[in-house]
View 1 (cartoon, helix red, strand yellow):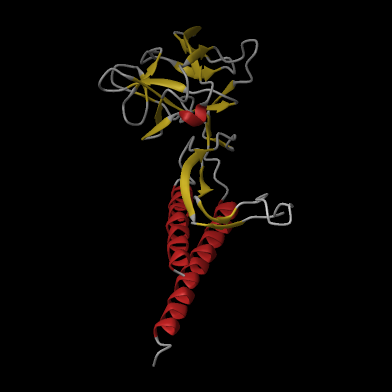
View 2 (tube, rainbow, N blue to C red):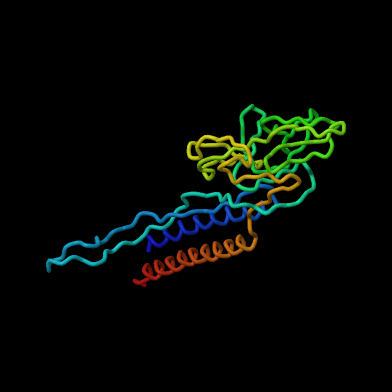
Length: 261
């Protein structure tokens, strides 16, 4: 019964992680470019009373063993990079990514981070920056007299300047062998790790890629509220069931302690 107490306790702890992840998904349902996460679990070691296939006196072997599990633990929080829905904004500096890839931005310390959030602004120097003021890389400058700014699916930014259409720059994208291995920095930013692999630069629409850009649109969060609510209910019921197992084990221990009375 002491084993059941510890096993149920690990189950409650694991479901708390599950609820934390689900709650974060729901909190970011309106965050541009947000990618939902999923908690992953693994069973713990087992107490083995008898090995399967152990020899017996008759010369045969036992067909099944006797093992009792010791509970569960959270082993990972995996991020899903499924495509989010697109939101039409009519803002030419809002750029949605259809397909794989990330934008590159330069942080205040000079390092590079990566994002799927394409809600860019023009700063006082005419540079395209994120909402936090991080500069898009490669740097693209927009003159103050630029009009009718457009972004092609291939990432070419053009504008009408003095009644002439001019190219302002070419957007470059970055992809990773294992994007799930990226580490989140908050602010819709990611940084690479040894698990993600090195960044690979490419141009949208080039051969071998499935990426195109949508100007005047934003990629929304890929969180599905109904799915997350169902996950929340399942996690809550599992938490309650584990707490009930602890209560039942405690009652059984209490009855055993009171046998002498």
